[in-house]
Amino acid sequence: MKKLGILFTASLIFAFVGCNNSNKDANSTDKLNESVEIETTIEQDEKEAPKTISVLMESKSNSTAQGEVYFSESNGVVKLEAKFKGLKPGVHAIHIHEKADCSAPDGSSAGGHWNPTHEKHGKWGDAEGYHKGDIGNLEADNDGNASITMETDQWCIGCGDDNKDILGKSVIVHEGADDFVSQPTGDAGGRVACGGVIK
Image 1 (cartoon, rainbow, N blue to C red):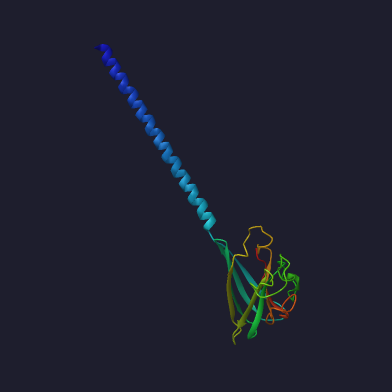
Image 2 (image 1 turned 60 degrees about the vertical axis):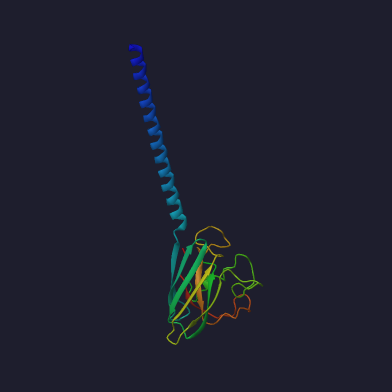
């Protein structure tokens, strides 16, 4: 009878210890799952957080043109939003240029149109070719105010792809309209505003 009591007590102890270990394993698994969920959420937030930059436009070639250009990237698409004042009424070309340098009084230090794929100049989306910097035209009203927006998956902000990355470039507004035909610039005339440095 004594042996039976001892055996029963030992069984209870083993059952209790086994149960506690199972609870510990379950708790460890729960904590691990929580940790994985938190890390996944942080990674998703980092991936989905839009990148934004703004470029302050300064007057060039004795113009009074000023403005600001905003770029934002979300889910692989870059949106451009630009607003200007002090332009002469009428149509003006706007392009991304290859160098982040607006030091020259006429904006010439910004170089030519950004054209990493070595296409001919043209209207954005033209099947015959266009520069990655060929944004197009905007129209200034009688007060000299103008704005333009566009979206594209052919640009990125800081992705490191030389054919897509707009970092290290500048934005130029021209005196006249882009005719989308004349090579290599669209015969848009002088540079009346230069967009600082995209960085």
